Image (tube, rainbow, N blue to C red):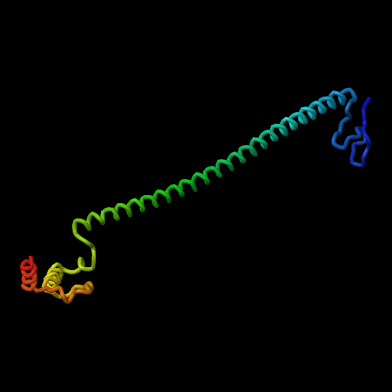
Length: 169
């Protein structure tokens, strides 16, 4: 006995199957269907396993991406801290160098005398000014003494005043 399926216009009238030109016995169809169902079941199980594996990989990928993001944020934070410390270090070094320069300047002032405009002039000009100051030219404003008319800059007069005081004793 032969098993035939629904007839179509393209099908072979003897078999009822559009692709087969020979009749298929019924006894051979059931084991083939069983085999097809087994293959389909295995394929379905493989796809389910692959889907579960894919879900595990996706979740681990998401975890790795988030970990990578955390690492990048930590790196950026560390780089900003390093830049801050470098800026603080350069500022401190500049402050130390300025302090050293300021500390060296008083030592140089002690060795070379007070720093003023006269140091920029040649030594001969300084010597000439000192000689002029000694010769009696006024250097700056003189202090006011109310009894200045009684004070004499004449050394002979001072000696006379002292001798008069000695006679009174």
